Image 1 (tube, rainbow, N blue to C red):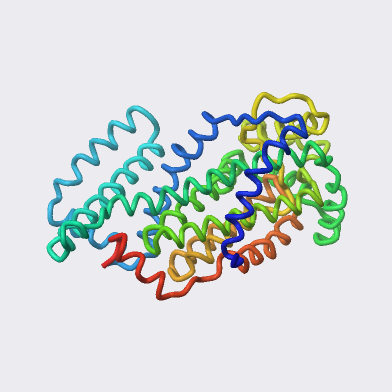
Image 2 (cartoon, helix red, strand yellow):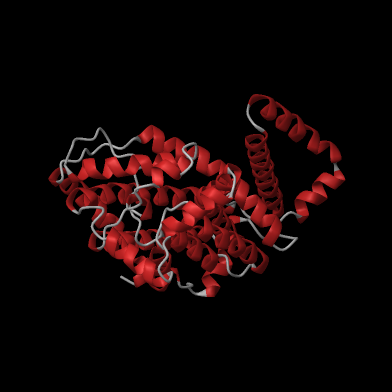
Length: 391
């Protein structure tokens, strides 16, 4: 019953309560498994491995990061030929961006296998037959178990945010939050900022902002991978528990102060905002979906609709990532610079109020205080040795 384990009990309670809650609000106990599964286990997984590899190159010490990899390729330069052929085939079949991501992913997974074989050869002469640890299985388990828990928790968040919208008018506190924003911005608003940006910058600027905005999700996956491989499964589960605790806090706040976002109050938003952007489609879709839930109109299944605007989870989750990766200074500096751009993207894309971002700070701090504080250091130090990631 220690606070850092509360997220397990809350997750269990939400799971047990899911059927009666959905039944009470006439919502289906069906998820869009194909859309959610492919988005999480295929696209997000590929992007997360890529970001984890980039962050490893930037932030990990040379002996833990890319030092052994570069040494192997210097010793045998022909090892790079299959990767180049693989990259060329992918460029021909897809795009250069996808080809780059998948090629880096392949190189990272091959490197992980090489290190598994190295540590197995290193350990086996000193171990009895019954003591030989299945190192690769431990490595995979250290990542997959927390990843599955995060997927399960996010399904709960999607289901309960739909249930909240069906019982609480999702636009109820938007005028209040907009008024607070006007006070904070000395009479101005996020919508005014967006309209100015639309006139001042070309479409490619907004596409770059979208890339930054949606790039927050691979940042979470990359942090999970790095924490799991460097600190072990227990610490990775603690990271996921902190992320889920912040989401559970956000659900409570969202129930008390439901809000859609500044774009829902702006009468000229959809006539001025670039229609080719993915964020335009999301915003255009969420408003009628929220109204349909409020009117208790039947929906076929629970999918990717996410309505929580207050607090801004695009700020909460990166702060938690920075906390868990804080010992790698260069990595944290790179992520902090990215997160500053993320704040600009959140506002200029008119996704959140300024007050949403401000309230996100104490939400992240509270989640870290409840779940994310370090365990005993001596316990963490033994995990990498057991999984065989570091020597």
